[in-house]
Image (cartoon, rainbow, N blue to C red):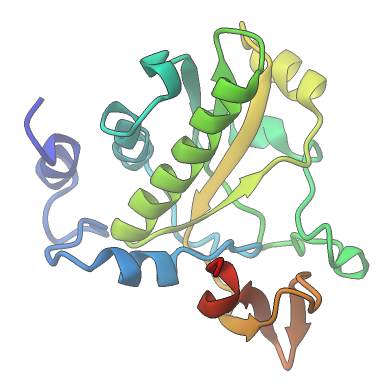
Length: 213
């Protein structure tokens, strides 16, 4: 499959004048990483298309895989195709329980449910981490945002979607509405994210404390 096939098909199907999300520039990895923040509120006036989710999942055909097992499988859900089945089966903002996130009217309406064809083990978890980060970065490249959801009812989701495998994580995708900034901290400081003056603050340990002498 040619590079950017899905993005080109998006232009062909929806037209270049539509709400295309294909970036024509090549942002650096650092830029993508800075933009790749977990959003807990989404603009519901923007509808994520299945073709966009397919472009995001395609990242998995290019990433590393522990032992090259490639056991992850993906269920795509859009507003028009099954996203409502996840309603009430997940929660966001575990460190901010008093906010009861997502707030009404800001719930994500597109999801990628990640499963494994084999029982979860250390190698599956390695692949899961790589996959979630790669897909989140691809979403950012397409002008979208995402959040990896692990706080969800696995049995309920599997039953609701009639999945052949147990889901391991859910990636919510959409146009994020949160204002987010990174706050540099020392390794002994509190790592929990917090809200301050309407801004979602994400503590990150500074470089010099990550490197061992």
